Image 1 (cartoon, rainbow, N blue to C red):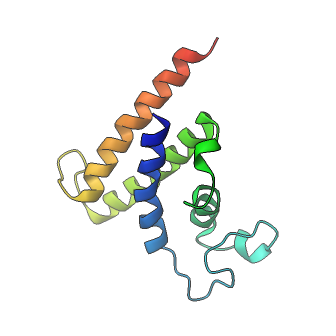
Image 2 (image 1 turned 60 degrees about the horizontal axis):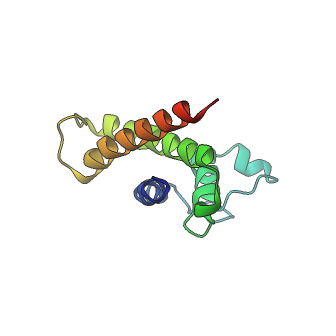
Length: 119
C-alpha cells in the first residue's frame, strides 16, 4: 500500500512542478518557511507540498497518515485542474483523469485501513 501511494505521488509532483511559475521565484520553487515572500506567493501551497513530498525526501520513512494526507492534497490539486480543463473525470480516458480515479480508489483504501486500524 505504501509503495503504491508513494508511486502515485510522483504523477502529482510532475503536474505541480509543471504549473508553478518559477521565473520570479528566488528559491526556484523550494519553499522557505522563513521567507515572508513564500507565504505571500500564489504558489505557497504547491511549493510547500513539493518541499515535503519531493522524490528526494525519504517518503518511505514517513508515517502512513502523512502519506495519506499528501495523497489527499494531490487528489484535490489534480481534481481542480481536471475540472478547470472541463474533463469528466469519471469517463475521460486521458492520463490525468485515469490517475485521478486510481488515486481516489487508493486514498479510499488507505483511509479504510486507517479507520479499521484505530482502537
